[in-house]
Length: 170
Image: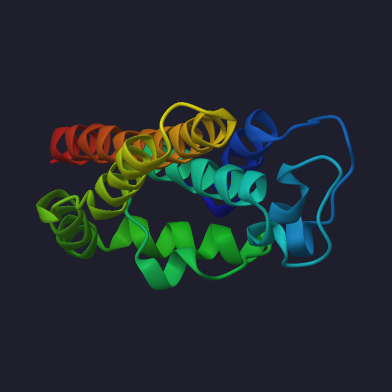
């Protein structure tokens, strides 16, 4: 795959993930344009929506090209050209992709925070009974627990799809 084809494919995926695909964007910090309105330069990870959009975009790139980004790769902000070079580099590093994927699959999920939140809710109901504070806490903690668990489940599903994709490539 040539660098131009790769760039076009990345921009196609980028436009499919964007909130407003028809809006103009700056290639030097194009990831900030995943949301609408666009974030200032290199600040997409400063909001929950921005973080979600950023990582979903990177996940789609991983699935499309059968690569794995390291944690250091995911922490950087890329221009279109820098990202093309990084994807080409990751495509060439088959063993590195396998090592990263193996590490991700072996990682055990920990549910300490969710358990603590449920224990707090149970304690509030035990000491306070049913009142408006306990109901509001239950709704708030329920949203937080749902958000955390859905993110963990999405990550596990993504890693399994990526493992299938990379193993089929061999």
